[in-house]
Image (tube, rainbow, N blue to C red; front, side):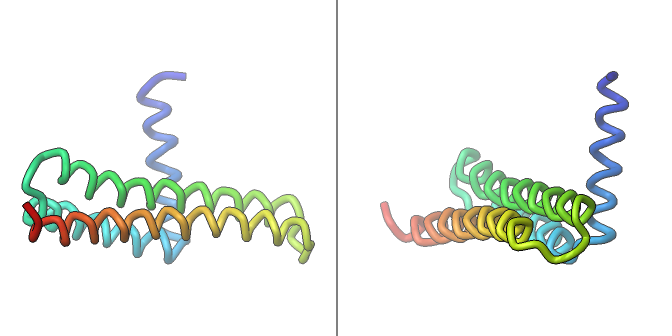
Length: 115
């Protein structure tokens, strides 16, 4: 597969997620706000990279969560306890990535007041 085709597939997936998933849209808005906020908050380029990177990580985990949920719904559209557990695990991964994001942003904000 060519790099161009792989990029097109990725963009189609991102476009689908943005159109169909509220959480992905919310995280995309957070990412758009994080770029200028990181430039204002960060005192080094590496802090800015960490701030933007952790938001990208949250978006990545949310996209994987969405893919897992859609696959589960395709495999078994009816309620199933084991499928429900799989969806819960994917959701927990998204929650953990969000907690990491909050922690990194808090550390950066609080760190501005420390030498």
